[in-house]
Image 1 (cartoon, rainbow, N blue to C red):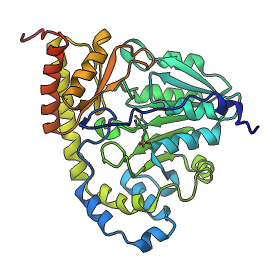
Image 2: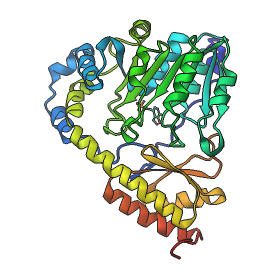
Image 3: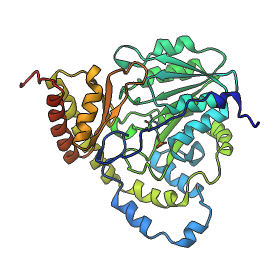
Length: 358
Ligand code: PMP
């Protein structure tokens, strides 16, 4: 019988709860209002001839590089951040190597790293889900070939400092340090140009979140040109499809649309965090477009009370250290109004009393 590799046979799979997502989708950290109308206009102009041709990635890489103020040879467009992670794992990891992740975090680092046969070392976050610099430093050795950090992190919303990340880059030159900035637009802090000083540093970005293009699958991997030279051939030359490539310049050009959305999300995040304080509910201050909240044994009741009001939020109970935690994505001002109204009703329904006003 045909047998897959051992590392693949024991691989965990990622099962996002995608079925039946009727209602307001505050469960996947997506953009909740959709992309710029300019992208939709461009989509409608596409013709059969454009779909018949193989996509040409390079001209768009120049456009994205100029937007990021880096050189085209320093980046690769990818099929979402997921592919960027996959490519870094495929380029640097061999069976027996070690890959360090900080848990809880986004699942795909572990999955792609483990698929290569590398050993995944999970370092637990510190108190309040703070980035565990000392814990990571303690696990670095000569077998460490990848360190993957989501910054801000998902599902906690916490941010590792640039100093901490660069310290890691400096002490582990034998390891690729992948800093996943999927939520950059909501946070504003980046390590992007630092790969010029630290050739083992990679930074990824995505158009799935603030830009509202999760369905088109477009991401960016940026790094030192000497390293990108090795990563690029590992990807398919046609990894980003022509519809995505055609839409990308419009998405980038409409910065006002993205900024407006980000501003509404940030205002909503502040309102949600204030509301939670008033109810005396524990949450972790977030730098991203979502907030992780502790409901303890009432987590499932809260999720279903929100679902009854057609608002989808995400159970994160099975993530490391997240028992009883629920993650809520923020959207537009109107959606935040709707979410907060439902949240108040849901809290009363499950028997939580407001501390400040009530
Ligand atoms: N990185 C992080 C930290 C994420 O939270 C997500 C989406 N949940 C991704 C990457 C996936 O992004 P993409 O759609 O670009 O593959």
